[in-house]
Image 1 (spheres, one colour):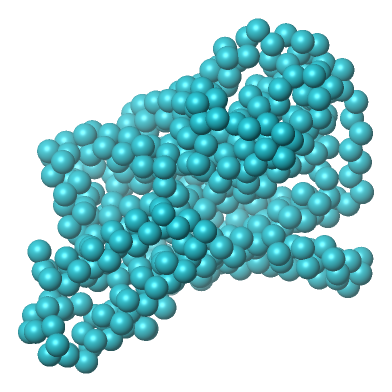
Image 2 (image 1 turned 90 degrees about the horizontal axis):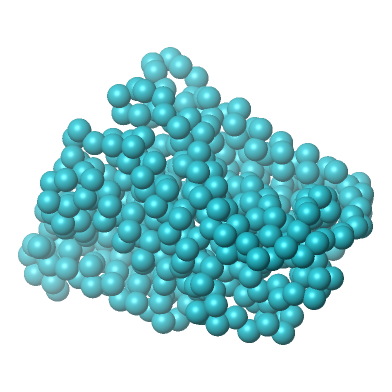
Length: 463
């Protein structure tokens, strides 16, 4: 292994350890790491004698990673999609449409058992198009309300809403940051999550249907766990929606993303064929958000909601991802990605099934304890290296396996996903302290049901 590769691997490992220890300042840690990789690239370009001849040589050449290369690794399409979608979702939440839909569902349910199952499934459906944390914030108050009326603990219901929200984040392009990252790396568009094209040209069911199968399997688990809760429900719909425009904007975003998914990018367009810019999806998400903001500002004169909409954008995640793109570009240039990819391929002993199994279940275990965004972003750069060792295997088997494990694995523990942390935070404010063992009582069976279902289906579809 080349010296620069060893150094880069050490820096990357330290970065991850520090992110685990100091979670509140993760963007700052990754920013420092990014600066180190760029500094090494600048030094390499100056051919400094300080490190000796050959220090910056990698297996594929010389480590060249300056400022220009670092900036080119930032995926602005991903950044714009996250910012735009979060802004529009805030307007959607403020319109109270999600609460109205939840109220209607609750009023139609015969007892607690079916209510928890249906409201969990509903949370999942919403989360396929809305950020997971936002989904929990929207639907948890409804669960709290009916639990207070029935004088029962809201802990199980809120946990089920949180884990269901996290599950469905993998169903669509805009459901979760991990899905957006996957789409960028694997060349997927909105429609690819429903029907995707295999390497041999055959059309196959996309991730959406795999997630729905997992959701149904986990719903059976929820139904079994709440089988004794047969208390009758009497619930009155009280929420009123006075502004339907945010709903139209959110639907418009989804429809526009579907529409442009049929237009190829430059890399996949035929000679002379019209193609879309790389930042098309990001522009769409930003555009619909800006329409909502301009309307609030100029026509409704509501400066407060405009201010809050910009506040609700997750700048923490955006900063983390921006710096992480630079770090991943640095470790790629230093040859670290190739080393990790080859190690995983060797662990697979030449078996696509074994490699697929390792990626899915290692992702489940790791994402139960670490943030799945940096983990997924790193692994997405490693998968092409692994796939290169299996020319007869469709790389999408590993891409989807990673998404399945990394997204659903977070449901094993209360700290494995932001949606879980949010749900527990809501319960804490209501005076309920949730132990890890209590959370895992629901999280582990739910996760195993969903992951095993997805694991089997993905292999059968993409093997």
